[in-house]
Amino acid sequence: MPNLTKSKIMAYRQCPKRLWLEIHKPELRDDSGAQMAFAAGNQVGAAARSYFDPKQKGTFIDIHALGHSEAIRYSSELLTKGEGPVFEAGLFAAGALAYADVMLPSRWDSKAHWRMIEVKSSTKVHDHYRDDLAIQAFIASEAGVSLASTSIAYIDNGFTYTRNDYYGEMGYSGLFKVLDLTEETTERFEEVREWITRAQEIAQQPVEPEVETGKHCTKPYACSFCSYCNRDKAVPDFPLSSLPRLHHKRRAVIEQSGIDDLRNVPDDMLNVLQQRVKECSASGIPYYDAEGAAAALRNHTYPAYFLDFETISFAVPIWLMTQPYSKLPFQYSIHTVHPDGEMQHDGFLDLAGLDPSQDCAIQLIKDCGVQGPIFAYNAGFESGVIRGLAERFPDLAPKLQGIIERIVDLLPVVRNNYYHPSQHGSWSIKAVLPALCPELSYDTLNGVNNGGMAQEAFLEAINPVTHAERKQQIREQLNAYCKLDTFAMVRIWQVFKGIPATQDL
Ligand code: SF4
Image (cartoon, rainbow, N blue to C red; front, top):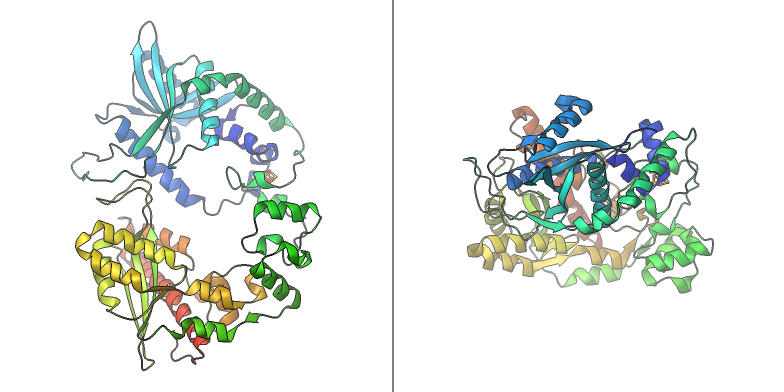
């Protein structure tokens, strides 16, 4: 029987075909986007080590340096002797292999007993974490490790980072909540034994199991083999997924009737917006209520501002007085259109690596002036970021609150008055722009052309090992990207108001 890692057993739990493909055809994976999640996991692991081992007496089992065999042997030695804490302890038994995030010595009688803690970077305990812990505890138990308890540690998003760690004093006490699942875990051991047996059988099959794609392909994780599994599927030109806000129950009813193209869905199953998408998709003719769009903007006077933020979130806060996963602005772009039609561009971008929030708030107050609408696209995001700044800097709060009160959301204006079939059910600015303002395109940008790339670029720029030239290149790419976001809003606003383009980007 093949030996399987915990992640392979979890892959089997999601889908037997996924397990088989991971073993026999790993080259078919599409892992784009995994890098950020991997970095967050590393930060949380390091924070957990300081949290559970404040005196730094523990041993970190470095799998990459030791290799699997030596990592397991060395872990076994420490666990038998009761020498801990042990981090990433290698466990091997019953044809399965796992690395336990945290093993804390509990007590010693004739034998060492351990508290096993699995650390997660999420702020909730998901069901699949419980499976994960059960597998790990089962392997430990089969390997002869006596477990005093099994728990999941997860991020407390109410935690505020209040202490500096420059002097070796990590300020992460309170970062984690710990949920004890000892009883539940132990009760599931026979279930886990069956998973491992079945997973081993699947792993040994000469041909891949037949499994249809479905909801399980995205839960609990987005499967990396979706492109491969869907390779022969005919995708309709206008799939049901392009119907905005289609409730999953209604979608299931439609699918059960054999309809997979939104153009064939009966009108009485669709709301007004969905019917509009259907009609435009069927006719190929865009919908544009020019009067409605102009009327929605008529009462907003000059100067008109157009604002967009780029933010970063850390599972483990690195800046004082910030919380896990808070959206912290490191950049904004703001275009201003004055009453005479003249356009001005300002912006903020801080790549120094220190908390940019206060400087950002001060400059934002300056750049937003004292009157005039501030347009944002999906404005709840911009309002939330500014509200976060106001909470952190009470002396700036009145002025920041004044900015929030001037914010106008451009997204519902667009959604209510414009739709082009090429949008495929999306009113994101990147979907609307090519249809409404074809002279502008995100495709012409170098390096950074979406929010995720902006975050990755920011993290690279603040990394001390990043060379000055590369940092400058990132600065230019971020500036170009964020500037296009607000210029795109200006152009959409001009089209809706019937104003010709006054200036190029
Ligand atoms: S895409 Fe879906 S069906 Fe294919 S391996 Fe992944 S989970 Fe299984």
